Length: 69
Image (cartoon, rainbow, N blue to C red; front, side, top):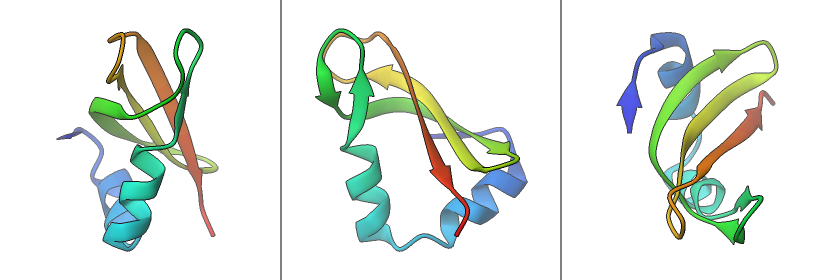
C-alpha cells in the first residue's frame, strides 16, 4: 500500500483490520471477476476511500470504493 492522501489513510485506519482484509480480497476485475487488489494506493473521495491498484491475477487496473459510514 502506498499512502499519497493522509485523509484517506486516516479513514482507512478506522476500519478494523479484519474488515480491511475482506475488502481487499473482494474486488471486481473486468477480466478475472472476483480478485484481490495489490499494489494499491488510497485516495480520499467525497463518498469515502478509493483504493486504486492492480488485480492479483492478471495485473490489470482495478479499484474499489469503500463508502463512509
